[in-house]
Image (tube, rainbow over all chains, first blue to last red):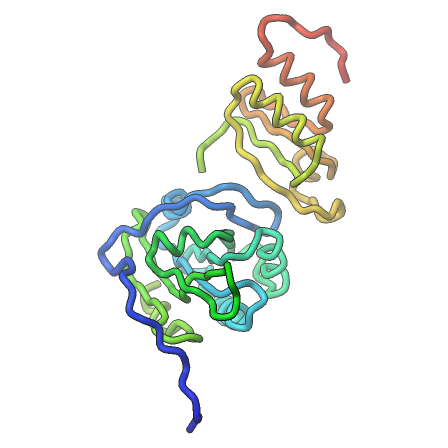
Length: 169
Length: 92
């Protein structure tokens, strides 16, 4: 397709790579019934494999598409899949319901974007003063938080290579 | 995450919940907060635990107690963790 515009190129960033240990963090983790502070370390400790998905604000089209795709591919059958966005727990509850993924997936709420900063993947949003988001990213982790696979967006918008991620599961 | 023996089911900005929180702090008790659905009819997690959809509700694995209603919970905490003085029974 010949488009007479370019998607936004993002500058390279220094993020956790395969072999690194993913930074630990604690944030409210939202499930279908409640939310409570939970650490990534404890999520990993309870699972052989964790997929950590940083995504755009709940309600943005990339957030909708990414969770529809993950739902349709049923990643939850092969791994513990958790999301992170800057949306509040209330919005996360709504996303879980609207995407019909409640019970299968849980979402960390990180309104101040501190987790993205820890991971080196924070990104300003043009025209939204005072708001930043994580760059779209996917990390596949083992139970010790060792990164087995990392994908961080280089364009905006950009979507993960779902087949690539699946190959790691 | 941290395995606290006490789990408090609470609602954001619920004064009855805050009353229980103050008591937990007063006694220096370690607890885990779980924030539940604001819509009363959707609070199934609390219903399963306590038989009612009201918050606050508390689960204390030290004693095996699950209960709701802040006055009851506060009385229970005083009775169980209060300094010495046994509160007179039957405070329900």
